[in-house]
Image 1: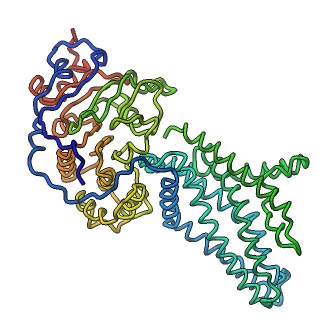
Image 2: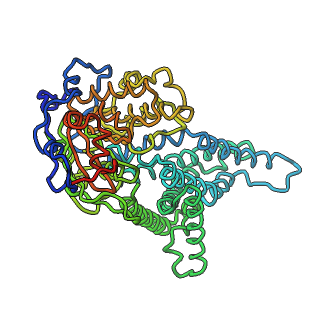
Image 3: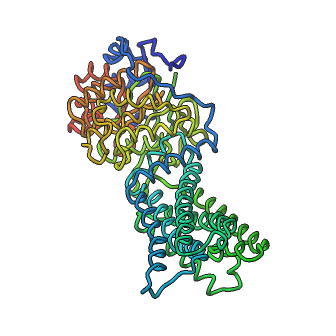
Length: 314
Length: 241
């Protein structure tokens, strides 16, 4: 790809430096003159006019200006690829998959003191995932993608590419969500399998309700991810980012316990939002209230993170 | 065609280091070498150019655009290599380049292999970057910088850790980029390297632009960039009038 007007046709190059830039008095004025006057071709100029051909034909298309949605999509793709390329994040789904298998084993073991109701097994697993597993995974991912990358000097890779900082933040959070949605999907499939193998029949399981519960859980997970991401942006290292994320979530929960009057306004109150759709009737009011608080909190936290991240010097 | 226009660029850190009233211009096809000791402000200037930090004062125009307004559009046409090579160690050389390419609209994966060949890393394409030597990482970071066929290259000590072969390869690549019309701003501690790579040099000390000149003029006047540098910084002990 060639760009018109970019070829170096004239070997005579000029370079201007404002007169005040050279702050020192010099013994020899020749150098000072050189900085302002036209300069004859250098040796490298002469060499450059020799035929030097590219072995790599470049085909990158020039956009008039990258759109935010495109930048977010490309960032999310890259981040997801990076997440999945790391051993620890490939191990997490395997570990998560062990949970329903352990439950299945406990249900099948006659000597076991702990037993799970087969038809409630998908909900039991969802409760565990929404309150413990996924918040921990969110803190781990956020610590790695923000504070960890900054600590390791990797954050300057996307920052020196055609991606705006807001797009980078949203793209990273989107990748975190996609990964966690994948974990939820694995849990859904395995929990249904474990329920059936534990003795539940298809008729005992309200598949639509179970599916809805898992989908609705993405909302609290999204909000929790934005808390973890904000904590990681404030932290200096991956470890402190992870701990700060957990601390913030615990503090958020504690706030609800200490001040019950404000608890309906706190995002941590809606970690089990799925409960509003699994009863005999869907509690639409509760669902709408929870969804509103979670979406509102996630929006405010992401905006705060973007503002903070925009000012960060890397 | 002016690619870089910097006027009175100032950035001060808490320790008072940084750059102070830095001004220079770079035309298409020119290679400006920033020469100076550690802490003289070379990397700070480059970070300000690539949006990694915000300047306190001054104006910047890159490719005719203001980084404060159009940074993604500038970076779409700029190749960067700032401080340590920005690479993901858990990915292979090929994966690093592919991921870099994904940031650019219209990226064609077919570009990856020829680029790896250009920097001499094709035989190591499937190896994880964590196993690479410093020089190999520099080569790969250079390939990442060249990926968008940039009109501006900002390279911070690009030959650090490179062997003789790597340095020669880098010189050849830079020549090709210059011929294409790419403007280059690079920093180095090595005066001899500057003579071979640059068309112009700018000497920085304690964040201030001490002097700037064309390389042929410097060689004609002083015989070497090293002598020129020692002279303008008064490091040779001779009194400057």
